[in-house]
Length: 399
Image 1 (cartoon, helix red, strand yellow):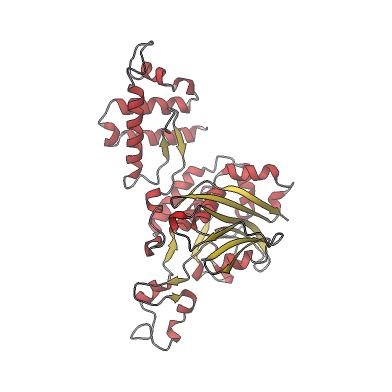
Image 2 (cartoon, rainbow, N blue to C red):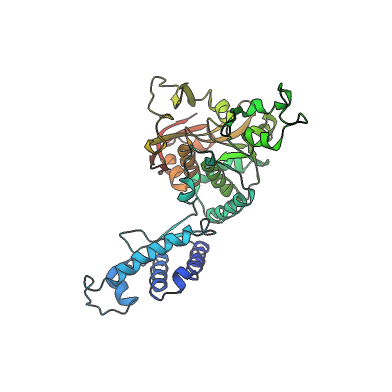
C-alpha cells in the first residue's frame, strides 16, 4: 500500500472518529484506531483479542478473556456503529472501513451504493429513477480518487488502453426504459413517443410534447443499477485523466458513436448494445415472452444463461452478463459493452470492469496479445434477496 492510500484511510478514520457515534466514547475510538493503524503497518499479529485487551484496555497479560470479554463486546458495538455511520446521509460515498465479524483485522473498500437504496423493489416505478447529475458527479469524483492514477493495474489498464489512448472523449451510453406508463394510462413506447406531434391526438393543446409526456417517454429515467455501473466506469476514466460524455440511449445517435470510443451500459434497455452484440458469438435473445437469455452461437441449443422475468423478484437466484470490447465495424470505433440480462448482471459487469482482480484472473488464461484483440466475457452472479453477488467468469472468447 502506498503512502497516498494510507493517508486516505487515515483521513477516513479521523472523519469517522469525529462523528458523535464514536466521539462520545473512549473505548470505541481507542480500539478502532489501534486495529486500523496496525493493519496499515502490517502488524496483524498484534490484532488479536488478548493483545488488544492488554495494549488497548490495560488488562494484565494473564487476564481471562472469557471472564472479561471487553474486546469482543467493544468490537461488536463498533461494528454496529460503523453500520450506522455509513447509513447516515452523506457518508455512503466515502471510503469504507469495515470490521468483519469473526476478526479484529479491519478491511478497506471502495465506496459502494448503499444496499438500502438498491433494495427498492424494481417492480415499482421507483426503480426507474431520474439521473441526478450532482450526485453522479460527486460519486465519480469519489471513485476517481479511489482508483488513483498512480496505482498500476496491468490487466485492467491493458483492457481499457484502446479507449484511453484514443484522442476523442469516450461516450458513455446508458440504457433507458423503452416503455413508461402511469397508473390508469396506456404504456407508450419511447421511440414511438418521440413522434407524438404526428399522432392523431396532440400531446398538449399546442400540439407539442408536454413535460408530462416527456417524462412518460422515459427520457429522464435510468435503472439505478445501470447508473451505478456507469459511475464505476466514469470514475475509472476520471482517475486516468480521460475525458468522457454521458448520453442516454434514447438520445444517442450513430453519429455520436462514430465520434470516438464508447461504453454501452445495459442490454435489453439499450438498442445500441443489442445491435452491436447481435452478430457476435455471445449475444442477447428474447425468444419467448418474459424469458431472456444470452446465446452462444457456437452452442445455440444451450439455454444455460437465462432469466425468467415471470418469476417473483425475490425468488430470482441468478443473472448473467456479457462484457465485450470490440471494434465496431459500423462505426470503426472500439466499443465496450457492460450488459446484464437483468439489472443484477449489469451491476456485476460494472464491478468486473472496475476491480483489477477480475481482469487479472482472465489475463492469466488469455491468449498472447489479448489486449489487442476483440474479446467477450460471459459472467454470472448469484442473486440473494434481490441483491447481486460478486461476478464469476463462465466463458471467454478472443479473436
